Length: 583
Image (cartoon, rainbow, N blue to C red; front, top):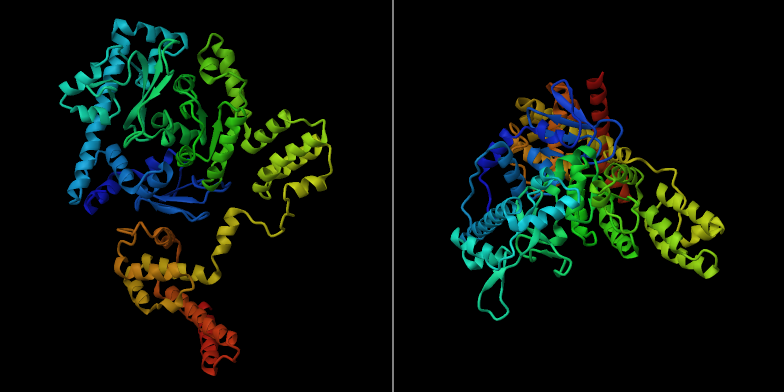
């Protein structure tokens, strides 16, 4: 993969407005020279997320995430570092320079770029044909019958493929693309007899499919007549398009998802367009397949909650449960909007009873329930609760699922529901669902994060932050510090980094060391809070000296002996000096 020059990356960071970028994900409020907000990476009630618009850094003092604007785009939009740089460069009009790269990689990038350009040209042709060609009247009539307006269809670039065999093939060649390129873009097929190629999409309504950055990946196409098989045809799996990793409409829904703090997931293309037309612009589609782990990971980059308005038959629920395993690891809550059998959002939102349908669908979204709870209710509704065998079968299915939920509020509620619906004892339900008593030592995520830092670790962090605030004195103290002073390995690495980068501590951080990036970002943003002056730094260093001596004393005691007299004297001396300095 090619790399951008360091100067290019710095130009992007300089041009990007960190407040503007982050405001799409959380409401920022100015506090002095900085902005504060609720953290977009974890649930919290009190703002612990801080943004420095001058340094263009962010840090959460609750969960510990932090970095620069590029890092934020990587994390929240699920992009690689090069893609995040490119996305910001496009947004703020920055020209990127690349370092010299392997000729093969450069050629591969050039080929990919040509395929994307070819798909863009073809999408524009399909759109033009839909609205201007007499032959596309049937497609226009069908879309109108679904209640989809021209404006909404235009926003998604919906088009129509002509019924001829080689229109796209010929147009592509006339534009300078080879047959091999047109085939690689998924636009043509080779004839079975091997004597030529013909257009893949013919006499179909065509839906352009784009990635989160709006780049063309391929097409989905729907048949115009009932006897046309198959009903849907997609671009082939390849370098540009993968159905498992794709969410239709994500490029348009992304800002709305961030603002609404949820994603609405539907099944098909027209469902998404109908949702957006009705103002539910945080909607995306899985394009008729069962939701995949890859799609869950993509959703988790933009929201902490996804409401699934999908076919919830048994096969659909099982696919959702498989996705839940991935969602839990990504801290994405999956909820289900209960839909009537055979009912889809497009029919509700753009059908004859549009207003009533919109109200019904909105209520379904607002009344969505946790996926596990929804599944449990569905199993209970389908189960034979009148017989011991039927009740046992329900328990056999739900027991492992509830057990996997751990000691959560939802799991407790499900156990209570089973006691009531199965008319059995709490002890049986507890045994079958693996319940464990709650610990009185349970703490919130923020409390756990704060507890991770010991008093000594906070001192280490404070002294390094003082060094950043007062570089002239800080360089001397960094030289006096030794690895033995630090109880946290990342603090020792941070000291080594600061020795060479004290003037610009966040410039050029090694992104592969995420722990160091987060630590340096945190101490940089803490710097202004720490007291300035050599006296405060001397006191902090004395405290770290004391910590080092305590380590040596503890080591001696662990070995079964008494600590050396010199160490005891040294400890007493340090304690006295700290008391005098603190007084």
